[in-house]
Length: 101
Image 1 (cartoon, rainbow, N blue to C red):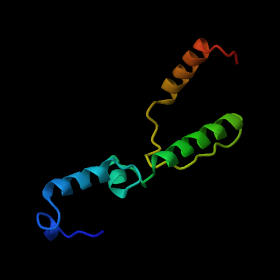
Image 2: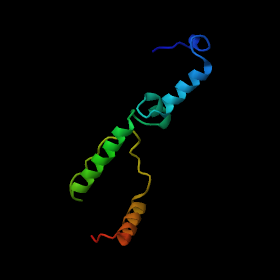
Image 3: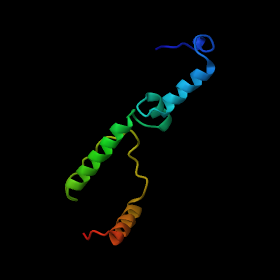
């Protein structure tokens, strides 16, 4: 369905236009959503779950000396924590874990 700007107000109301644009922004698989979120490409919720699950399986199966396999995600791969913060969090997790290492 294609709409021109001239169609707004005539063949489609302004309210319906706003609703359609809002839906494009919240539907994860659209380019509009990806663009507004700063993602590199669109991905549905299911695709994101699959990417995260696959990444966790690779991380679990590979040893620390193996080359890391990175499954592409739509968001930036920039780290959100420093290496020191990650090491501190890992030590804290190991202290609280019910499963000994």
